Length: 284
Image 1 (cartoon, one colour):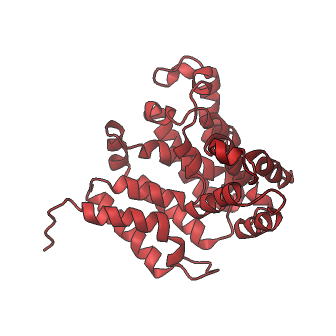
Image 2: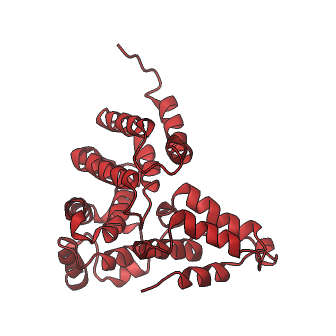
């Protein structure tokens, strides 16, 4: 018999920390598959979702950040993406219950898996993409108000997947009959909503964000080449399938990272230099 006096809040506090900061360290370096510790963490999160524990949505959002965009080679990355998507499909009633709460998990789920669907265009990922499409289209149609808070980036990620089954109908409905969506009269209303930093940040893993910000805060202009080469090798930016990740990085640099004046006036690498470097990484 398990007796809980704090509604699992002590547990939730440490799970958020583990999911956000310790996830990569739970696996051996260069390991391709998920570790037993990662398997256990995802299993525990699923059980706490079933129990509808308060705050478990924050753990789910932290795990969603660990899914790296533009990486379809890693078995561990595909495993995490598939299992988190399956979790929200299986616990759809719990997910939809969050619409009346302060949680933004519906928006994060829609934003994450719509964005990831662009990486799964190959026919061998059809099953995964169909599952993502079904989940995201249903959330967008039934919970448009919650999804609308994402802002103008909705149109960017939907345009990227508009050629796929399911998303194509949603995209056409949004352009031609926007009145089908709660309170929307024209697509321009979405353009007028700025995408908040936490959504832009969510498509970078915590380690990725930390390393990119380090370059823009601590590396002097002219000395950034070796850091850029290391970053590119670490996150495989030279791979053709990583170009979708480059767009996420650019959106983060332009829309979420705002250095103070003392950094702008200093000799460190400026945002414009990082944007130029990332644009050169685009091959197509």
